[in-house]
Length: 366
Image (cartoon, rainbow, N blue to C red; front, side):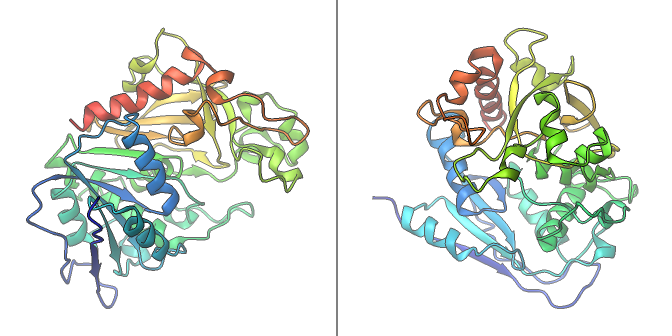
């Protein structure tokens, strides 16, 4: 039987200072390796465990997982605690951060700097999962009527953490943590990639259909080519919860990109799963494009020029439905779910690309 241990580390800081203060309760005597999972909801923990336990993401068994979240996030992390406890996950702990991060100290030393430094020093990598829209003021823009900001405190913490890891052109004199450990691994998925871009000084298109394609209605978006649709807009017309939340489209991987090695044949344009209405506009400091949408309008993946294990993906490589033949996918209400992702896009069309991606991630963590 697995030992049922749940470790909570709470950092309590008062005020809104620009210099690190207080202390944290991370186990400095940790002898095993550690990976950070940001926004460790039950769903994200289940996804992470599915990938690792099924050897899709072959993370060595000596790794422990620390899930990091802000106390003012909108998610109820008592649910995550209960899940960890019920599953007896002795290698998984949660870290609640109470630090106040001011808007004017996102891209500088702040109340979280000491914690971020400790996390970095005691970990080998971090995963930033998907989520809602980033507050546009964090990249110097006004708020579009189609932008919906629901979880600002999560964004502030994740933006500040990624800035302190990677640096950014908002504060070019700041020395990023990764200067000391350039092989640290970072994976940003969907929102995670957008956060990586904004943290390093980049900007975002706040709505793809209106800003990139001049479309003002759901009907006009659905009339476009599938490769220009970046979520499943059929969900706007129904309360059918069996519809998949994302849309499938192809991507073009840039020659020379790290992820080009995942293609079985050069020039293959694999299908991926996307669910977003915002995208990278101006690239952040040190970043380069690794993949585009087929029409070259939407950045689909980014890599870092200096830090080889930093990858951002605008699409979702992690959902269970991409790897289970028994999960049939329903895209439209009037059409039954008859095929799995592997059946829709077998081999080099998409399935093998995703498997190769997680195998590559496993190699990074050896």
